[in-house]
Image 1 (cartoon, rainbow, N blue to C red):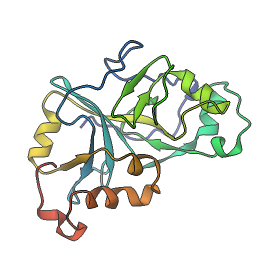
Image 2: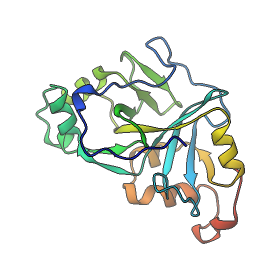
Image 3: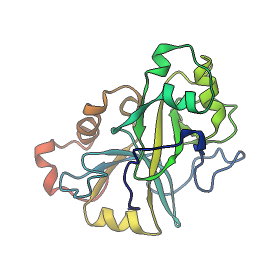
Image 4: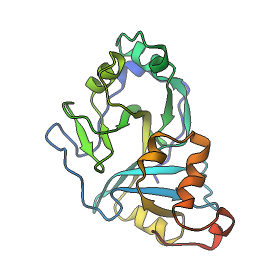
Length: 214
């Protein structure tokens, strides 16, 4: 895992929403074996950045992997980000939406995980029910009420180099399950890890001895 920690001073005007290797013409679903998967941190995970986390794998290839953690709240609200980006928003519910800690890398990069909606400058299809958009235009659409029906916004991401995630999975640091839009969008943050574990068909109390991936 790439190291890092949540910064306390973040110049949100410099948010550059971008997935490595992704551009305006790249809207396909990638073909690594962990694509369309949620990573579940094992209870013995020692890295505080990932203890009891659920992470959506956005990109997995021979060059490495990128994921967005879905159950860690950051110190920011969406309203603060919109204000710093000079995007006007009158919707209090939108402005009060919590922003997640997407991972310990590049906290000046933002990611919007959302239900499918086309037309943004830079989007990546994760599954039939989930996309990730990394261009500023989606935030403007959300602010004016024209965005996707469900979404989460995250700052930062989790990154692994070539073969690193595969090695960590062999060491039983992670399990994986197919992505579930209900976990991504609907559950309270505090319930997402246990719900993801339940998709494995085992109880949390039995998880310590379980390895591999689903």
